[in-house]
Image (tube, rainbow, N blue to C red; front, side, top):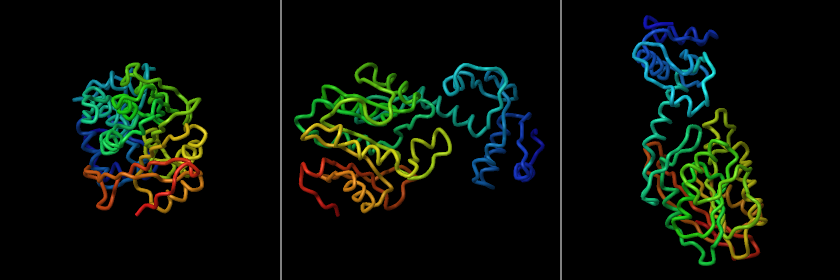
Length: 303
């Protein structure tokens, strides 16, 4: 497939079951993908436009050097490989974001996300964690599902003596270790580390749907498995007098309160922020729910 193909013809071929190996100008391939995106939103169809690489080198006119970006995303080169252009552009964008980092006022520093790890480009949840009063007896904190390590970094900056961060994604563990530079113990495990903490913090995936790609896992939590696992583990892993801080959006209040009650937890406070990113819904809020075991504090009814 080369520069002579139209977007309509390419889409007909794709819908007929073909995959298209691009042999024309690289920048024209990008334009074709954009045109296909205006005609279909099906990821499988958009991923049918393929770019050939040899040890991650693209031998097309006006092609960028993507070798370093691909090594970061996929590991050492293994010879010839066909990569969907849509995916390849994501790899390039992730590499650029990792190189420049994301400045966060709450840290007065930059966080450098890795490919496949949720990037804190929407920082209101970070600001909520940075502003919420920490219980005065807090000495140990857990950051569950740490991702880039940004919330663990905030907890360290707030003076908590010991912070343990966990994630079940090896990419996230490596990313957090790089960002945190030894200030936090980072463990690859599912949800909780051994022991108890005075403060448990988590920003889980918000959408209860099945993830289809690696990048989806930061946003989609099928059947709320992670959220429920987190909530049901609070009582076992929280020291007396401690709190669990849950960052959540896009969920109804009634749904969350039901989950809290089922897990034996009560609400002791809630803070909210209005997202400012361009994709935010008009009624969207980001909430920090402060929770403790139901037998440890009176229930605070939320409006």
